[in-house]
Amino acid sequence: MTTALLDAPLTLPDAREVLKFENSYSRLPAIIDLTLRLEWKDWVTLLGEEWTCCDNIAQFTDALVEDTPFADLIENPSWGRWMMDEAEREAFAGLPDTVTIWRGCYTFNKWGLSWSLDRERAAAFPFLHRYTREGEQALLVKATVAREEVIALKLDRNEAELIVHRPKHVSTSHL
Image (cartoon, rainbow, N blue to C red; front, side):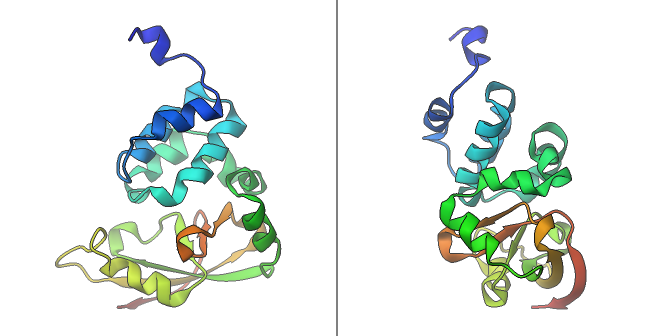
């Protein structure tokens, strides 16, 4: 394939096709690689559709924040509505003005982008096989965030996941 074809603009359906054979660890880098090939809204929509299928968001947070339209979503969280489907937008509208959120993690990824509305669900994450870190202390972080600062709510996988950049820290406990 020629370089010109590799750099050609894509439609959202084309981009979905590109991702068809990506796994949960190669998917996010592939989405980042598509940044310049998609219209802004299509890229954000694609990221929203694929977010919960990515198991290495912490590893690529810097690239998301520095090299993609995700930086626009941090500055203008309301634009993150493009990341949500209709049911997620409806559930988001029903959130209180200030939301308590939880993150099960380790020290190295304490300030990740994925948080849960469900304390027990968050507490389970550090013990899932794909996230376990031998020899490191699992943590549970409690934070609050204004609903208007939330980028998106994702409801698939029963995680009640909020995508948030740097919420207000309340407490950290050992799990």
